Image (cartoon, rainbow, N blue to C red):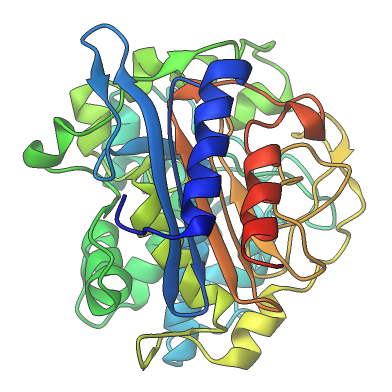
Length: 382
């Protein structure tokens, strides 16, 4: 353990209980309080077949937790005056205007209000590894839902917003390089990957799927947004080509230590280590609910999704995926299988939870992080 404190030892014991009593396999948890790394724990196995143990450098697929990085990249461009949330996407990416999408704004994309949750026809595990192919296909989509109706962009979110970032970057960097140079390197974030290196692959934990993502009817909105042949399962996301591709909405491979440091920027209202990424006002705005936040989302099985106007989720006591991230203004993003990261700007607490057991919490009590999160807060006096 990098951190040796009573709080860290208490949380370590909670991780051990999660493995012994709740079926966890390999797990990491890290937390910042203000500028300080106060929790840095791990336990269990990264690979049950070989017996490889988790350590602090083990990497994990975090799936949609990646969307937090995508949203933040857009806010970085807005902070620089390169993106206006209320301008049409087509002002930055003219091809996006095809088939009636000329008025859809950057804010619409952040808020999952583009009406285009679907993936392009013919999407395969091979095509999702080709950024240019995917953005051409997404630019050609026709909306299938009205803009005033929420429609969760399970995978397209990353290409839509990532292409806006790429098009507005004066240096013309690809999205993965932009993330490294604008968000990771300046803040000492070393293991937040949108396409891993050959060296990093040996550190990735092996996933164990316990039914977190089943198949759905091909004509359902959910399967349109997340097609069955590219769903978030080990058979797809442990492929070497997929691991190396920039699949911005769901393809992140992080460790908890680096993910928590990223969330600490937001928990500290845009600043870390004397450097400012975003203004406090921009972070505060990102902690407000989006328009129509209580409306049922047809992609999300007609349930409301508690999303913020900044492109994040918000804590909701009735949403199992977000239950551990308590706090009135807490922003978070859950990932398929139970990974989670969050920032609470009211307390300065930032937490990241990574694991390799893919499950779907049905209730708040089911979430593997629920007890651990409560232990973190109690051990820190929050």
